[in-house]
Image (cartoon, rainbow, N blue to C red; front, side, top):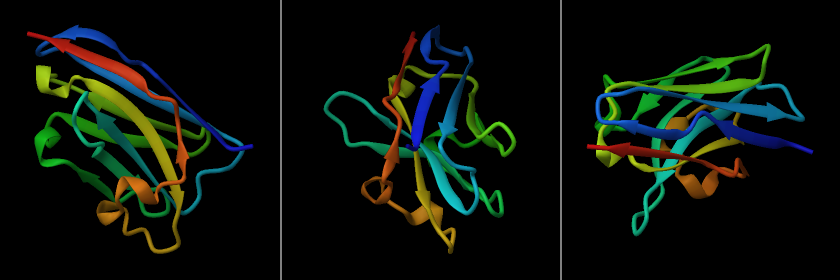
Amino acid sequence: QVALAESGGGSVQAGGSLRLSCVISGYTMSKYCMAWFRQAPGKEREAVAGLYTHSERTHFADSVKGRFTISHDKEANTLNLQMNNLKPEDTAMYYCAALQSNFGICGITPAFKYNMWGQGTQVTVSS
């Protein structure tokens, strides 16, 4: 059974930082698109950042470029999102997702294509 579990969410003041982690059990991260999505009430789920495990090619939403970084630990099967200089607009439920891919065109892969999801971790940023 493949399972994804996020952690690291919480409440922080604007300008603060949080580090989200996603532990993937049941398989080794090899040739997968892995990404962080977020969804705020009344809004569509959007991709925040992602990578291709085979090449470590990354992609970021314009709104988080320069503030967020994404990385993965192959040995520990974890996906991490370091979020710095957080803004109130970053408030959302953050989800970890994965999709097996031999081509690694992760940056243009929409949320509905991902078939492995965590339950989410809430991030709240106050002004």
